Length: 637
Image (tube, rainbow, N blue to C red):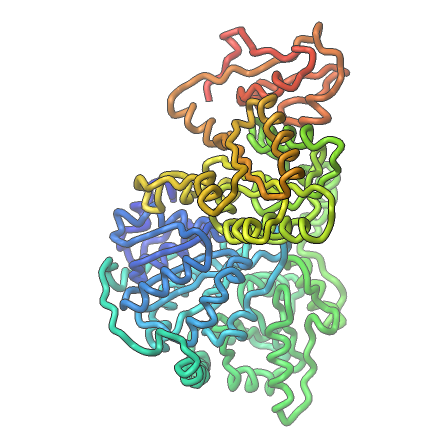
């Protein structure tokens, strides 16, 4: 299936089998469930859900938007539900932190139209700053939670979640992980249950305004609905028991797949309790399962969420049951699971001899692993952020500033040769941390934010800086996209989530509008001017003791390549003149473009990687880098 041609996912073809990414399957489930409104902020590993629905929206007859952040997306989806429409919002795990203020209260107000909240956790931090386990958000809020284990279940559970939401009149949390969202598998399609509608009706109800008097009443309703959800969980087909053995294994989500592979490798007879409706848990069925099996092994990634609940339930049994899991050290509480880890945990729990997945595979893996070259993340060739970092570093030389960084491609400023970060917490924290640094110590402070991050979470912190007279330089790296997660649009791009023209919000106008007096816009590829602007601005910040904003604006290199490919514009690589090159290594050691390297003690530029930005020629003090003039060597991207 090619997502660039989205009509396939709009076909109402029950029984048809398609190869889908887990996130694409979730999008298809939303279509089958009759979603009318989708609102999201992109974040890997959830990005493809919104991206797919964005491509489908116009032809599918539903509305889709990329909101400025996850809290706003939650509120947009909630209001659609209040009007009786089915709605969906999706986000990565830490995005639910941003949305939690609205989310917790939303569980109290309840909903009308089915509302589904997709949260994608990221064990092993493949693309995130932590391994947060969002199952606890369901327990914390009182929202029902469902967990798929593969792409087929991802589609089916998403479609079902709308029905469950309407039955309980509560938003439903669907929790996946990176390995489910980014797996591909055959998915058997179902029928589209209802057509989307773009117009609903809002009927006034005091429950939607959470004043203390109504909130106290609604809390009792939440508890009542949790009990109703528990009864549904007891009967749900998403919770199933299969296999025959004295040993009982309780698992959910992607861990179920590893369990099945592990018991085959161990040749173990076991009964599996696979949970898909994980909040509230089916307590009666779990206690019945524990009564007839011993020992019980809990297999789950990250925190001992199931283990804690199962152990609490075991106290209500008349007999003692051995329960093995994370708290006994049989399974880790960090990182992603795999079949090896689960085999090891089960075999240790049962005091069995360790068994490998496959001797042939283990041998091949041992032979290949040392040969794999390290591949640290790096800014792309031609990335404007590299030029920005270079200019800031030169301008700040001798000042010994503190750097507060943020979340995005530019987070790679942590890597050599720049190493320009002292803190990085969450979206928008670069600006907020800079406020605190300004108040707490005397070193100069330089904060970084991307364009999408600026709209997402930096604006309130910048207002705080103006109001409280904090003194620092905020560098907004504007590359015209939410680049790290797949080039989704944002308020500064001039394009909406429906793919239509939209007003373009200017970062510099926002900064001036909230009272920042020192605001400048630069092209980072004009290196000399950029250094001058940064140097002058840092001086003014120190003299005037106020905040300054420099918007460093240059299109993302990947977008430039795509545009030139579309226009059939040739890219002229640059080359190093060996006669002029002195081997000063500024281009290699201080700029570090991946297209530039040393071979046979000579600096060379790989024409297959060079994207014709020309910044290396600007920084070469000896004029040794020049454009390739041989037209035969010009590549067309």
